[in-house]
Image (cartoon, rainbow, N blue to C red; front, side, top):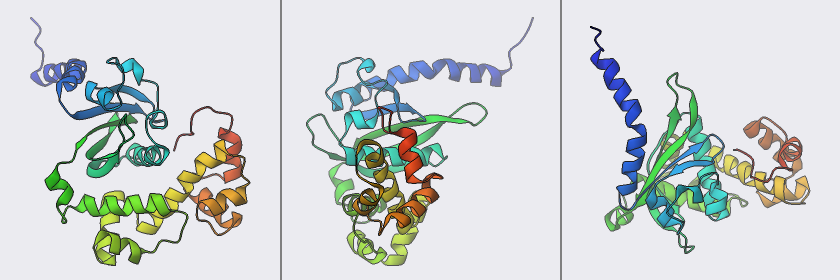
Length: 257
């Protein structure tokens, strides 16, 4: 009579329970859950996610879409940046951020995003959850993510203008050194590296969907000239902006970040 090793049986049970756990997440009130592939395309969402966007009760209403189909561009840009960070193997834990709704109102939420890995460790996508932040979490001045979220929001809204670490530190209510430590700890980037990434990533949309020249795109996103834009863009994406435009311009979806 053959016997099954307890560890193997446990592993099989966990694998078989995966789809059941996804069903259970439909009954967690007020917590949105999702899974995306490496290109930011939704593969699965729970009922709370659908309700947040006032969609049909079937996940088919969102599966196959991206954040650009569901959220304002400035929020979708940030979500795609987060996805690129998670695809690289970094988790985002309890970040305070703005999340859109069907009525075009954005609410502050606490969001966690992690990589989805195969058994061999290969990252195939991202998974996340988010819930509305409560009053205590929103008003706690010591909450590290609140200061970070203020800084990230300011960078997104003013990325085309010069932004110093000192000005970001004032927005966060921290010293410059504390601000720099916060960015490196949470984003694995310095404030100026993050600003460069934001400028480059937001310029991608204009490269694909606008008729502006490279110099016009450069100035719209805070680069002093086309040469500066090309240098920074190549460093971030490993290709010059002209090649990026030619490669992705004919696609209907925003290019993967």
